[in-house]
Structure formats: structure tokens, C-alpha cells
Image 1: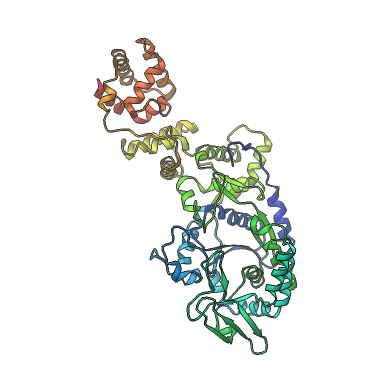
Image 2: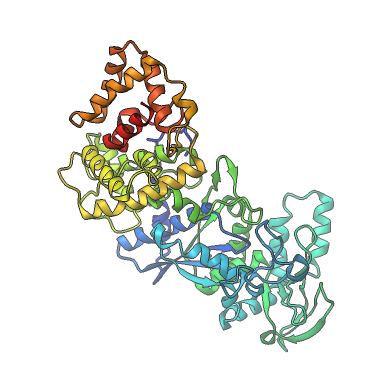
Length: 555
């Protein structure tokens, strides 16, 4: 979502359309599959695929169908590039499957396990629960070995499909070269038992350890390692094999009987790898293949994210600054073939928008029936847990931004009491439920993380322990008279934010001080800046006692 997009524009008919298409398959169990190569820390954009799958599953279950989601960690892919964060030696590990490389962080059994676990541990917080399947383990099954045999026996058909799909946009010279290269091409590579590699070289210079011949009668393949030169002829079941990536995908669909799989635009374009896979499903594996659900990428500040390039904003990074429900809302509110854009600077506004939407669901605001109807359909799909009957009031994110930064100034007890007071006023409550109180610490934590990393200078509030001498020295006699009179205001009965703001104006005018100057004086005494959070609320947040002591320290 960008600041220019009309936030009220929704397009959720796609959910119904996709579910209807999936329902038409009518299997005993609906299997919605997602997958990701473990080539680095996985960026938050991948959650769009997971959430789309989760929503399809939820909708299928809502009409009484047996449905589940599966996430395949493509951990058997060979290392082709080293993102900036990876400290392993390229000379030692380039071309080795991610599942075979050690975890340089020392906490997991392999490099791929580290990145898989980093991603999977965030799933419950986003309200998704796919079964996690490792690609490396799939290749250890009899079913996958049988699929590899099918591919080897249909090598000529696979060659024809790839020439049709991959070479369709090549010029005559490129096409001729490609057709020539495919004459001896096989769809299977071997993990070399000597050096442990699937291929030699990295991006731009990859040479796979591709099978060079297959004897279906003896079930033997011949191959030569492109890295160390080891070669042999051996039985299929004695080797560690991996299908070429364009063939690996439809083979997994076939053995799992995948009903539906979302796919990013790079794979889902007409004639792309998804369509190639569907063609192989029909002509090699003898079935229709899954329902394709194409989606546009999630961008970060207008830029494409990429795991292997190190342009990463992870799920954990999102959860540190914003609620997961907001992410689900961003993904689901528009057609999946429209791009989503994470603009971290807009998080406070987006939280407000989502929580207004939530209030629409509970009928708490006076909105038209169309907005209410929309909320009834979409809100339950944005929630990470089952929707409860009673609305739980949320502390304003923007209030939490300021309050969270005062944790070194005010006691935890004082901060929580300020939050309770504001929550009561914000939602016209006489008391606060335990459920509402329980949400406050996470709100404060996210707000603090957001302002530290993405907040503007105006958002950031730092209260020094004392008022610097150079600020005290700038106070004029009129400034001091204003402060003395304002002290009397603070000694009186507590005022609400607006009343206190009004008293600043009134007190300033009473001594002939310009309004702007009065505000500058107070801000400089409080936070050593000429401006800051809305003053009335900020003064109340700090509390009369603390503000009185602060002002008296300069008088």
C-alpha cells in the first residue's frame, strides 16, 4: 500500500473465484502447497504466498472440505551464490546442496535448516500452520525415485516441452544453439559422492553434474562430476539424484497430488516455469497438475526484495514493528496480481486504518452497509486466531510511539497507568479487560522498535536527564514569568490534554509571550528541541509531578 493509494479501495472477489476453481477439482483432500528455495534469510514478501494458501484452506474448510497447507523448504537446491551475510567459503561450498552445508551460526544441523527454522518459527504469529516438508527428504522417498524414473523415461518429451516453452522467444541463432544443447540433455543431476557437489561454479558459470545416459533395463545412469571429474555408472537407488528445477516442480506436484499452488509473477507469466510444469504434468505424468494462483511481489519502499541478493526485510523484522494482522490485511485487501509495497514510514497510519476496519467488523462506528459487509467477509481472514465475539480495545499506536520512548524516564507502573488512562478515554471505557491490558506491552515494544528504526526526527523523543545549561541561559525574564505562572497551573486540579494545551496559550498571553515562543520554551526544557509531540498530551504523559520538578530545576 502506498500513501497515494485510496485506502478504501478493496478487491476481494478473487478469493471466491480461486476457491470456486479449486473446489471444482473435488479431491478427497485439498492440498495447497507453497515452497521457497533456502538461499538466504527469507524476506517478508514470501508471506504473501503463504497467506494466500492459508486463506484458500480456511475457505475450503468453511464449506466442510478436508484441506491442508504444505510448505516445502527447497533445501536440496545447490548453493549458487553467497549473500553478504553468509560466512562460509565459496571455494569449499559452492555447488553443495544447502541441506549439506554446515550452519555457520552453529545453532542448526545445516545451513538450510537455519534459514528454514528462521522462517517457520514466525508462522504461528502470522496465523498460518502449514505442514513443513524438506525437499531433501522428498528425494529420499520411493515415490520421488519413481518420479525420477518417469522423467528419465520421458526425457525426449521433456526436451520437446522445454524447447517449446523456453526457446519460444529466442532468435534463430539462440534457438538453434539451444536445440543443439538439448540433444544430449537429461533432466537429472547427481550429488557427487566424492566432492559432495551437484554442480560446478556459481551464477553465470554453472555446470551441473548432469546424467549423460540412462539404461531403463538395468536402471543405471552414467554421469561425470563437473567439479572434481569423478565419473561412474551406477544404479539409480545408489545415488543422490535431483531433477532440474523446471522438472522438479511438476514432479513434486505429481507425487503429492497438489491441488493448488500460488506462484509469484516470475514463475506465473504466460509460458513461464509454471506453465512449463503444467505441460509436463499432462504429457509426462498424465494428469492436469494444480490450479495456478498467480500473484505480484511484495516490494519494500518501492524496491524488489531478493533473498540471494541480500535485499531482505524478514518476517521477524515485520513482527518487531507491526502486528501480523496488518500484513494479512495488506495482502488480502487487493487482487493478488497487484503489487503490495511495504512502506515502513507509514506503519502508524496503516495500523490506524486496520483498526478502524476492525471496528467496522464489530459495528462500533457509524459506517455504510457496504463497508460493514466487506469487513464481515474480510476481517476474519486477516485475523491470526479465530475471531472472538467481543471487541478488544487497542492502545493507539501513535500514542505508544511517544510513551514507549519514556521507559527510561517513567516507571513501568506509571507508563502502564498512563496507557490505561488513555485507553479508557480513547474507547470511552469505565474499566479495562485483562485481554486489552495484555496487548499493551507488545504494542509498546513494536512502537519503540518502529520509531528507533524508521521514525522521523519528529517522531523521536529523547528526554535528557537534566536541562542543558545552554538552554537555561537562553531563557528571558518573560520566559521565566511564563514558567512560574504555568507552575501554578500544574499545581491545580488535573486537566485533560486539550484543557492543558489551552492553558499553555492562556498563560503565555497573560505575560505577553507569543504562543509559539511558549511552546518552544517548554519543548526545549522537556526534550531539548523546539518542537515535539502534541504538548497537552505529552505533558500529561510525563505527569504533573515530573513536569513541575523539571520546570523548577530551571527556575
